[in-house]
Amino acid sequence: KNEVEQSPQNLTAQEGEFITINCSYSVGISALHWLQQHPGGGIVSLFMLSSGKKKHGRLIATINIQEKHSSLHITASHPRDSAVYICAPMGGNQFYFGTGTSLTVIP
Amino acid sequence: NAGVMQNPRHLVRRRGQEARLRCSPMKGHSHVYWYRQLPEEGLKFMVYLQKENIIDESGMPKERFSAEFPKEGPSILRIQQVVRGDSAAYFCASSPLGLANEKLFFGSGTQLSVL
Image 1 (cartoon, chains in turn blue, orange):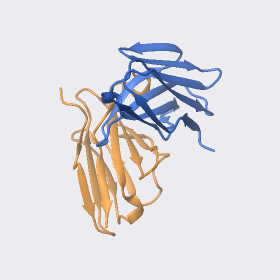
Image 2 (image 1 turned 90 degrees about the horizontal axis):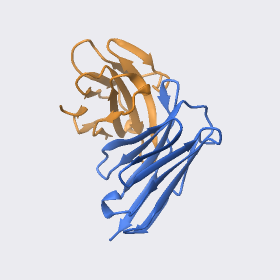
Image 3 (image 1 turned 90 degrees about the vertical axis):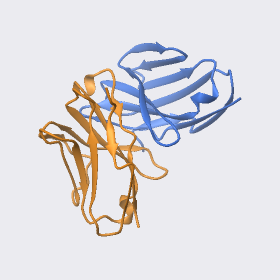
């Protein structure tokens, strides 16, 4: 069993739609990162969360440590949001990575 | 302030050769992490280093792989006697304060292809 489960694995949305990506994990963690990987491989850390909710532009991330669950929301999605989104819970000195959610936003 | 620099961007090696992957962290960052992304798989932690010290190498294969982060110069991930299964994208990330820091900055990765 993977330590991190993301859903959905693949997601296609129309421009403007509200998008939710879910992440459940089984390991004890101190915090969790959401990462964005664009075609061509570059990875960007979007958020680090240890509790509650964070917002950055059209992106919102929430975490419930007790339930071991986090969500990433994208409001008013845009084609440039097309990427792979990776949930990365953090425990000790290392990350545990989800396999990612591949998002395609169609104009 | 340049970001995390990895080179080469692409590296082709024949089976049995050595591969050296370099990572220059962002200025002021003394914590470096190496990750591997196998085809069709997610990222996997390999090793966490601070200057001149290996902090956690629990994700490193026991043989053929080694990493260093010297006092001067980039961090190096070295793979000896490469095999086809080593073909992957290798990413490094850096932070100034370890994983407790708000942001982790990633390099663009090195794509290693073993023929």
